[in-house]
Image (cartoon, rainbow, N blue to C red; front, side, top):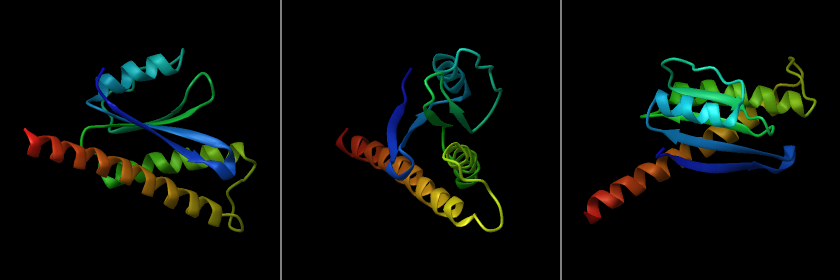
Length: 126
């Protein structure tokens, strides 16, 4: 299985998130099965948020990731992380959600740009 992986540390929440960029949905399903005993194949998808059997959060993306896919999966992740930390969404408590989404989106975007730059560099060297 060939994919890119990195980790995001959320010190304030004392959590870590693993980011994965995979080739296709088949690889997402293969990794999903390794991470969760009860994982069920998802069918065609561009991204997936899941929590593995050890309680570690993962964002899995495949192929050329659209911004809307990043936002979608980061929203799921943010909601999970903040609820686990005791923060609940309401009209008086949404700034921490917005800040967390912004931070996570930025980290995912940087991860994807780094992969793209390394691909371009390896093509220029060849």
